[in-house]
Length: 299
Image (cartoon, rainbow, N blue to C red; front, side, top):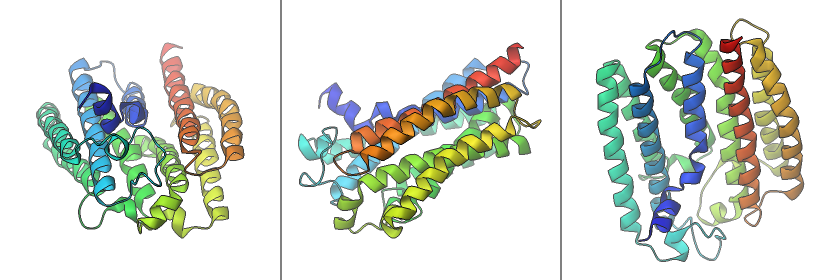
C-alpha cells in the first residue's frame, strides 16, 4: 500500500469537519479563560484526528464489505478498495490502530481533566464504529444525519470546550447548535448524491425516505438556519457582536456558493463538486466564528 492509498482510506482532506468543530469549541473557551493549555490542546487535536480517520477507515471497509461501494456505481477515484484492489483487511487494521491510539490519548486527557471525559470519549468511539459497522449500521438508517451531526457537531464542540475550560456552561450548549445543522447538511448532501447506490445496497437513509422536494428544503433549512441562528446569538450576551458581523460577511459568500451547488444538482456524477461546495460553506462558518471570537478578545 502506498502513502497515497493510505491517505485515501482515511481521507485526510475530509477532516476539516472535526478540526473545524474542535477549533470552534477551543476558541470559544477562550471567552472564559485567562490561560491556555497547549498540552491538552495538542492531545485533544491528535485524539480527534485519530478517531475521525479511524471512523473513515471503518466506513471504507464496511461500505466495501456490505456492497455499498461498487465499481459499477461508484465514480470516486479515492475509493481505493473498489478501484485499486487495496485489501479491505488492511483498511480494518489501520482503523483499529488509529482507535487504539485515540484510546491511549483519551486516557491521558482523562487523567489531566476528569474521569468522565474517558466515558464520553469511549461513547464517541463506539458511535464512530457502529455508524457503518455491526449488524445494524446507523448510516443505513434515516438517523445517520442526526448521529453524525450530533457527535461531530455539539458533542465534539462541548468536549473541546471542556478540555480547555474544565467546565460546561449552558451558553456553550446553545452556541454548539449551528454545528449540528451544518454537519447534518454535509451528510444530507452526501447521501442525496449517493441515493442511487444506497437504494441498490438496501440502505434507508433520510435522503431516500424523504422526497426530492423535502430533501431540498432540509438542505436549505440546515444551511440558512445555522448561519442566521448564530448571527442572532451575536446580539445577545451569549456571543460577541463581532461574531454577528463576521458571520454576516461569511453568509454573503456562502449564499453564492450555495446557489452554485443547487444549480449543479445532487447525483453520483456531481458528488465531488457538491462536497467541495458544502465543505466551503462549513469552512466559511468556522473561520468567521473563530475570527469573531478573536476580535472580541482583542478589542
